[in-house]
Each structure stands twice: as structure tokens, then as C-alpha cells.
Length: 149
Length: 144
Image 1 (tube, rainbow over the protein chains, first blue to last red):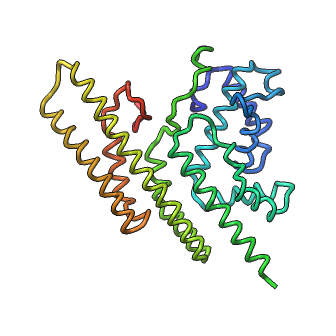
Image 2: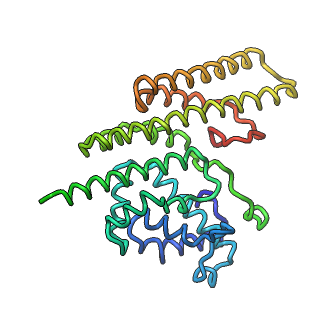
């Protein structure tokens, strides 16, 4: 769903989500991972306790799902260069060392959980492929840094 | 939006603008970026990855065109105001698009994933103009 099509309560929850939470997160990939983390692994339903105290659970679910899909779409359609910048930001904000994070992401591919439900397979294919390439770009840059005397 | 409809799964179509995904897949800008990294392994990986996505795009597009054609034929049987000229023109478009999709696959094999960029943009433009049946189980190529 497009955010422009949200009904009134969901729209308010969506605006609140952006103003109070997403705007404070650095980078779209960080935001995407955060939104994916609000989704229950088993049911696929989104929850946000803070927002649910102000808005109905259904409105919050709709707002989270919409924001998640929009960010996923944005990151899928952005250039590879932009995706590398977003990934570098994610690595920078992580508590792990770049080597550790890149190794884990390249082998376990935990970013797969960031894919929203019911997205076209073609879109998923492009997103995963681009992320794989972005990881390799960062890995190459990291290796060059380590090779320097 | 009602409670009932809001709990339903959203449609599988994720993009209002299908042309945007076509542009992203066949983007030369991405290739230029990879080349600037000056790493042959990366270039090779990019070409392999993009080739797979590009072939998938053409296969999916071809399937959608077939599905739209199938639905159109089914709906046409019930229609009373068919225009033979228009139907003939549509048949020509369906056949042309299916052929061009197959040509695109050959071009990718011969010239790489970015070679059919103009061809795929052309396919997307024509496909956007096709009538999309409401019963179509595939994501519409054009938002109505």
C-alpha cells in the first residue's frame, strides 16, 4: 500500500512513526532493518508497543507495513552506488567490526528477513542481487584497506 | 478502508511504476559505478548477477503478456461490441511483444545484461498500453 492511500488513523500513526522514530535513524537500510524487526517472525504481523498506546493496533500495523514496503521499494530502485553508501552507513552504525559484519552478511544473509511479505519475486530478486553486489564492493574496499602497509 | 479489507494481504504488485524497475535492472549507471571500483572479480560478479535478473525480467514480462492475452481472449468471448480491426491490432501487439522478449533473451546471451536496455524500455512502453483484465492473477503492468 502507498502511504497516500492510508486511512486517517493509519496516516497519523505513519506520520508519528516517521517523525519520532524513523527520522532519528541514520540511513534507509538502517530504517528498513528496524521496520523488519517490528514484524513477528511467525505471524508476519507488525507490532510497536509505543505507537499502539496512541493509535489502534490495526492502524499501527498498517503504518509499519506501509513504511516497510516504501523503504524496500526505495532501496530496490536506488542506484548500486547509493545502496553501497546505505550499507556502509549500516556497517558504521553497527556495534560489530566491519570484517565481522560483512562476513556474517555474506554467509548467513540475515538481510533476507528485511523483505516485506507479498512482494513480487522479481523485486526480491533485484534487491537481493544488488545487496550481494554492495556487500562485495564493501568487502573489496575493506580488503584493500587491510592490504595497505 | 474497512477493518476487513485492511487485514487482507496487499496485492503482489509492489510497484506503481513498473517502468522504474525496468530502468533499475538495465541501468548503465550501476555498471559505470562497478567499473570505477577497478576490480575484475566485481565486474564479473555484476555481469553474472545482472544477467540473471535481466533474464528473469524478460521471462516474467513474457509470462505477464501471455496472461493478459489469455484473459483478454476469455473476456472477448463474452463481449458483444468487438471491433475486428482493434482485435487484430491487439493480436499483433501480443505476438510482437512475445517475439521481442525472446529476442531480448538472445541479446543478453550475446551482448551482456545491459545490451537490451533500449529494447526492454520499448517492451515496457508497449506493455504499459495493453488492456489489463481485472481478473488477471498477475500484477498489472499498468496501474489503472
